[in-house]
Image 1 (cartoon, rainbow, N blue to C red):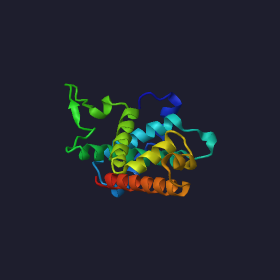
Image 2 (cartoon, one colour; image 1 turned 90 degrees about the horizontal axis):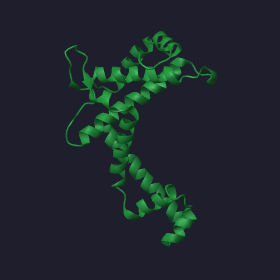
Image 3 (cartoon, one colour; image 1 turned 90 degrees about the vertical axis):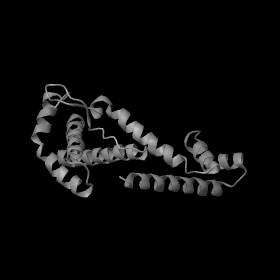
Image 4 (tube, rainbow, N blue to C red; image 1 turned 120 degrees about the vertical axis):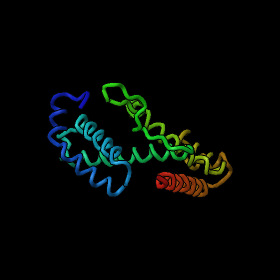
Length: 185
């Protein structure tokens, strides 16, 4: 386990059995490649060991399972984004295999933050495209310009209540579109 302090590494090694429990749970609920599920659960163990704070009052196992679920969902979104592009590319497919047998995967080359940010942006871009111009304008003014619904209403010549309904309808449209995209694994 790389980049862990000795105490973090000891914590991860002490709880390695949690990985197998998580794999059993997530592989059954969200059937994907066993290897990819394993990779996501190991990644979660490393992240949990690195950031666990005992003073918060949580058990490590609880904290780990939240991290594991998050990583598995991210893995599923990674795959869904690639499928939507018209072809499937697994981030876990070896792209280089040196003679020593340790393969390098695309997953290893792309930083975690870049992967997650890319996937989230793709999902939002697809969902945003489903909105009409009024919904886009109201959501943009509300969330990016920090305008109140009353201010937006005055700018667009509609009531605050109407702005509220437009924003709610637009966000519901985006949410349901993202759920459809995530469910098409």
